[in-house]
Amino acid sequence: MQDTVHAVKCENLGWGDSRSGKLPSCPHSILLIPLPFNSYPWFTNKDYLYQQYVQEGKSANHISRDLKCTRSTVIKYLLDFDIPLRSHGLASYRKSQLAYGEKLHNGKVEPHLGEMRVIKELQKLRDQGLSFGKLVVWLKQRGIRTKNGSMEWDRRTIWEILRRHTVPR
Figure 1 (cartoon, one colour):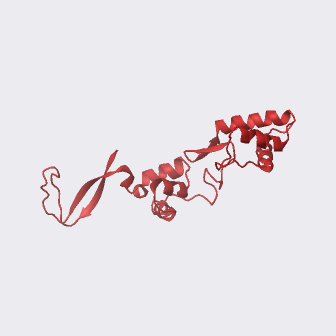
Figure 2 (cartoon, helix red, strand yellow):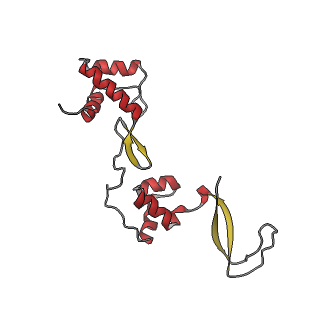
Figure 3 (cartoon, one colour):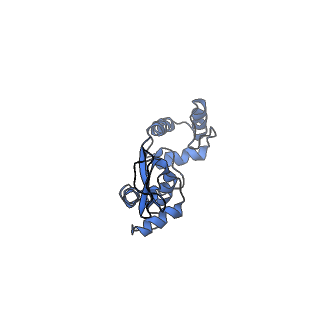
């Protein structure tokens, strides 16, 4: 695991060789403590927040989940560092739930290739005249799960998926 050095102001300890254990007393010193990557408070690093929020387009909520801190902490530091907040709903990932055929990769919605293959097969079967009820049976027989992992397909769900992915003729 990669170690990061975190500076902590210390009133009682001074510069010294931590390997020998000799740390002279000095009121103006800094103690350097190696910490595992996930222990470092990355939300206090302006460059990291700028990269995640502005360059990669992640939401404050997404960053907070990655850092295992609260969303309000991330927003506080974004404001402290004068990083302009996006208007509500303008994050690269805006939906509350991904549609069948989509996946989230690095904060961006991308096609889910496995689910897209299922959608293309459903379109072929529908073009051959199969009803939505028969498509439900077809999916269940093959053990294909819904987006939330259930085996309970519904005709309306399949209709919505095909409506979303079918090119108008």
